[in-house]
Length: 212
Image (tube, rainbow, N blue to C red):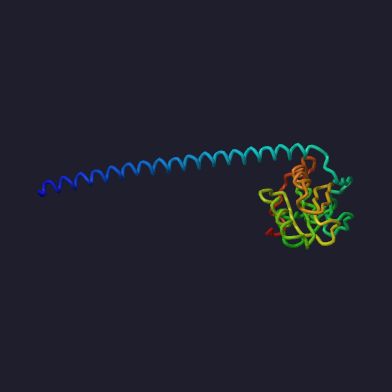
């Protein structure tokens, strides 16, 4: 075979190989695009499902917060006076009354906080979630999650309280057996930043305490 014929044959084989490679590349691109399209569609659908579910949960929570919550105790006639001494509160934890002039910074605490400072935070519209020191770690984590993104929620252990978990806002309190009780997030939604309080919305930071 002449040199010229060999070059032509090699060129023809090369053209065939290149054409096959291009076809293969197009098939792979189509497959990749199909997979990406499927993933994007699935992601959009999954995101939509999450958003719709969250919207429904929020609407349900708001509806429940508009109703009376079973088990909530109400306390009237609480003093808003500032004092410099310790206060003998009749409730454990306290739900209001005389308190220190400096409030407790809201957030999550691993150790108990001072009642008189915490009560001032309640006057600012805070919700105080307390738990027995021996509450299981997963339930403590659930309480911490309720404080996430909410600058007016305090969480702290409380020695000697009457139930494993207690939710407190100014003048109201709910005793619970565990942190998974469905009434707990409803309580937070209902009483957080209660507009009827004279100092609702005042700072729950720049006071005392260093949240975890």
